[in-house]
Image 1 (spheres, rainbow, N blue to C red):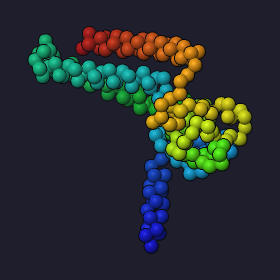
Image 2: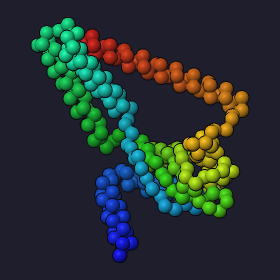
Image 3: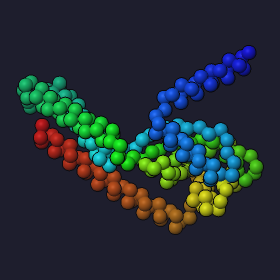
Image 4: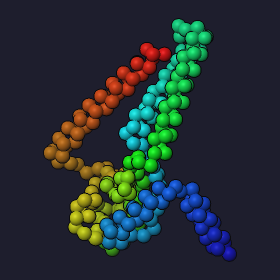
Length: 236
């Protein structure tokens, strides 16, 4: 009797979860299932989490503008409440009203862009499954999967694993091409609690160069955002 009740509860929860999914999320999950069926020799128990529809470049720019204005509004309010803002009450309220109007306008544009059927959004999702490895057993792997606007898998990375006790264990793929494309035998990815293996000097040099480039890109982005914030402060 208890088993039947448990099964009913699980089925009920699955139905509720499925009802909360958008049509796009269902398409994404189906695409990942098809990809997995063509990629792995055997898998079972597929589960998904952290689905997200990624913003287009235009939506991303607007989201940053809204975030900058919201942050500046909070800073201005804090300075006014502390008596550090050299503005009268009327000037302060007018500034806040102007910022709110700008944010509202940007939100409307963002919504319009989101409702545009011609948008080309990418999608991301975490895919969990028991996947057969080279000792004949299965390991519970997590893949981060990125799909394009045509619901095609364009990237898949192993980001976690439960039950992978050795780096000698590897996923069995249906084709050599799939193995070369998707298998990355890094202990730091599949065993988060285990000390990562030492890399060769050449790999270390590559990582250092990549980190330098990443830091340069981040610095440019920070400078760009600071310029935007300064522009907003000057305006209001």
